[in-house]
Image 1 (cartoon, one colour):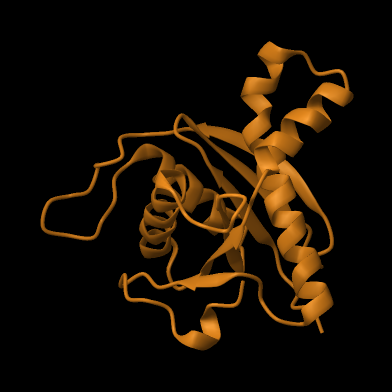
Image 2 (tube, one colour):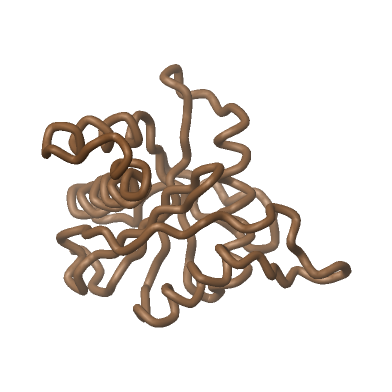
Length: 176
């Protein structure tokens, strides 16, 4: 049985962060907005409090939406490995998990979602310049929809749980 409640999807880019949210029944993901990335090292010295504006804006949206979960895309390589973009997404997800706790944050495989988002936007007639401002939202929709569909088919929360304390997830939390 699928859990009820709004989920938030996040596509982490180097310049922008795309946000999507689901309906309360967890069936459909829709675009929300694009947030400009803040400084990557904006952490108050000696604490875990992150003051980056993008993290704060995403956390505020999670709270306002009363989300039960946040799903962050993990950009794996085609072979399933992890490069610098995946490392950045993991760090972002952990920083976000600290800010939105006790709302869980999960990482889900997002191979090719940005490519698919560009393709869908192009096919729907959105020109190249306009694509830049919405492609991250479209990718967040694809990430979140895949997570919703995976949960509906498996009956389990998708992806890998991100622990705010930075420790590795327990084996049962590492489903891919």
